[in-house]
Every structure is written in structure tokens, then in C-alpha cells.
Image (cartoon, rainbow, N blue to C red; front, side, top):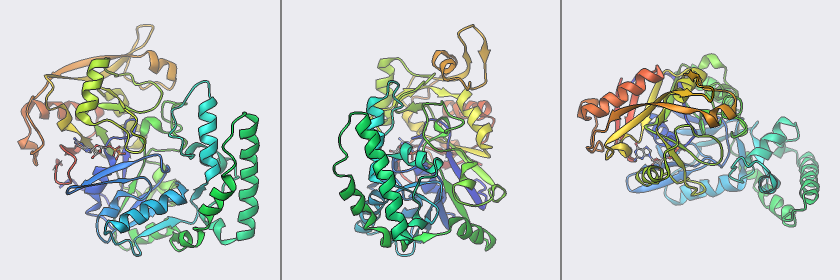
Length: 429
Ligand code: GDP
């Protein structure tokens, strides 16, 4: 089994949807606590356990392992209604959650007016970002603007009401100024959500303190990110990014532990690349191959059902992800999706408009739009990998492909996933 640190971060290294849910589910077996450090209900992790498929938006996928404690850190924006829907659905399916879920007292609340604003702004934007319309951006804007409402604020009803009323009125004015409607239900919707305050407060905890103590007591912790490195607010393909830091350093700020507490960072990479929403995807496939790959990989969003664009493996991006996240290992997922292809390609560099070839992921989104990938072609293995459980079980050509990914990313491959099921995983080293 690959060596796993006491405090490990699992981070997506592409544009999200890398299969983090599955890797967290596998690694969660060996830990006591799983904590989510950023994002909101826009990210959907899909985890298959036996014949059951669970889509988790806010509660860490560690919840599917009996007895593990699952935390939502201060870095998340919490949609209370959606959270309890997910919570109750898990209970309905027989999962015992008693004492197992904790929410940071410092987590920001995502309220109905954030959703409204998100939809209205995206609908009227000249340059669409491709948001999921779930209010994540506006909730983080309120956080940075120091207008947000946090879980701890739920204890002071009077102050809470005045802050919420002020924020709601501000949104109403903005929506009206843009000539949009939809604000009539805001009062009722907000009241309905805030009626769950007591229930939420019963789960409130200081996540930083809890995790730090657990580590001191010799327990093991997994910190789980949402989305991926290329969607990081600072390091991603700005402005086509999410509104928070998705990269590994955010695991510390987003849970309240110090960076020195983290001792391993596992980067999840798909064996190819996908992107949902707007923004550049340098290794995008031609339309026919794109459709083929989407069908092979079932590349449709877990939350929105949106089709994802598909591309070849982009090592310029994953090398960058290795640097930004300080990866100690990678988990390659969905290798099986490539099983039937006669040839696979890997981008090793980008050719920029003036002809320069670079191995560096550019900061400027326009360079990325016009970047032509330099490809290396490798023979496909044309053989099923679904039943492989050890590296030796894989076809030689599939192993060469993994070796090349490892070499180009400069990071050891620690896990290879060859199917949706929990047991379809190959521990490497
Ligand atoms: P996440 O947000 O990073 O967890 O990714 P998603 O849940 O959106 O997408 C991952 C999808 O791929 C889910 O439907 C998983 O069941 C599936 N998946 C994960 N690993 C593998 C794999 O190795 N092979 C195949 N075929 N599917 C996988």
C-alpha cells in the first residue's frame, strides 16, 4: 500500500471532476476524520458503493465509511437547505450519521439571495464564466466583502436578522437595477432556511481545533478539496475559475490547521482531461473524438448534467499542478476509459502564437486559448484494465502510458483507478 501521511490532502489537478470522490472514498478507509476545505454545493462527487451510487455535494465522501467523522471547514460556503437534504437522504439510505458530521463555526452561509444574484449576473454577463448558478460566487464575494453571515452568527438572532435583511435588500436593489425579477420569494425562502439554524448549530464545531487535537492524539486525517487546480481563484485559468482557492495550501486555511500539519498531498488526475463550463481547454479533441470520449467516460456533470468537453492528457497542466500543490503523489483515475483506443496522446508542451514552445502553464488566459499542444503519441493497449488489481496485471502499453505520465508530471503514481467501484483500484507505491 502506498505510504499515507497522518494528514493528507486530496486535490484535483485538472478542471475538476477528476474522480476525487472515488479516491477520497478509497483513502478514507485508513483515516479517522475527513474534512472538506472549500467550495459549495456546486461540486458533485460521485461515489459508487456496491450497486449504490451516491452523489455528494457538501458532505465529504468519507461519510460512506462507517464511523468516520466528516467535517465541513471554514473555507466552504454552506447551503443549509441543500446540506440537510443531503444529510437526510443519507440517513434515509440507512447511513448512521449520529455524531459524525461537524460544520465549522466559521463557515460562511450561502443564502437564497446568493443563488438569485448568481443566476441574474451570469445571465446578463457579456463574458460568461459558466457558473453552476448555485450562489457560490456571490457567497464568496460577501465573505471577501466582509458582509457574509457565518455559522457562529446563528447564535445571535437579532444581529443575524439585521445582517441578513441588509444583504437581502442589497441583492434586491442590484437585481432590480439589472431589470431582472425573481426576488419576490426571497423573504420566505430565507426564513425557511434560517428556520434550520438550531439544527445546524447542533453540528457546529471548531474544525481547526478538532483536527489539530486529533492529529496530536495520533489519529489520521484526510483533507478534501472540490473542483481542481485549473479552477483555483489565483492559480487557475482566471477569470474562468471558481471563487475560492482549490489548491492544497487552502486545505490549511480552509480548515483552520497550520500548513506544517500537512504531510502528504495526493493529486488526482484523470488519464485524459475534461472541462465543464466556459474557458480554454488546450488539448480539446475534435468534435467526433470529443463525443466518443464523452460517451466512453460518461462525462456529464454530477450536479448539473452538463456535458464536459474532453481532451488528451495535458502534462503542462499536471506539472504545474504538481508545483502549485506540492504533490507527493498522484492518483490516476479512469484509465479504463482509454481501453478501446488504438492510440493515445499526451501533450508535453504548448506552442504559442509566435512559435515559441513552452513547458510552462501560462498565466494569461489568451495565451492558453491560442496555445497549440505539442503531442506525443503512444500506442493504445486495446485491452480491458477493469479487472487489474496490481500494476503487473496491466497491459505493458498501459504501464508505459502511466510511466510517461509519472515522468512528465515529475510525481510518483501512487494509485491507479480502473473503474467506478471501490475495489477497482491499483495501489502502486
Ligand atoms: P469528482 O468531483 O472529482 O469526485 O469527480 P466526479 O464525481 O464528477 O466524476 C467522477 C466520475 O467518474 C464518477 O461518476 C465516478 O464514479 C467515475 N469514476 C471515478 N473513477 C473512475 C475510474 O477509474 N473509471 C471509471 N470508468 N469511472 C470512474
